[in-house]
Image 1 (cartoon, rainbow, N blue to C red):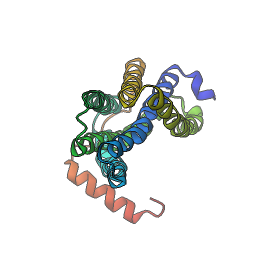
Image 2: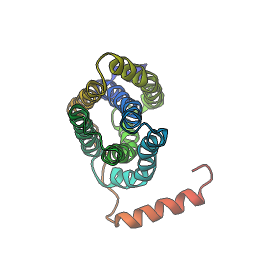
Image 3: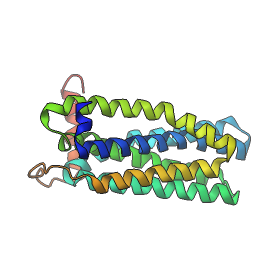
Length: 217
């Protein structure tokens, strides 16, 4: 737990738990809302599909952005997208106008933002702790992801049963706000000069070539 003694990482870690919990709350609430709106399990499955596939496709783009832009800024932008999606979902749920395609579009936007933020999230950690605490920080980051995977569905279920989907989305939005506040407190160490300005497409191609060439990638 030595890395938690570093104030920037501690703030980031607490915010990360909140943001990851919010993601898992949406992962449970949106498919349930789709099933309630349509009465068909297919739509619930599409809701899960719309969350995870854009996240997978967004990660390579996020890697390029993490190399070209300040990582804290990338995280702030993606968390703002997640916050807006959660608030809009709460408004849609409150109004009772749960059009399935609109729900899928919203959750796909949240999924894409989650994918884009992942490389910046992981590459920011070395800027928050001394080198001697880096392995501990990486382990703690994995711990928060697993903690949120357990906490998010439990919290979503408790809120859904007692207060309904609108409240669940609002709780998720509040968790995203806490992550944004944590990013305000974080002052990462500079990383030095950025890589020369190739186009994003060129960087994506280079990344694909590297993963195909290097075993284990």
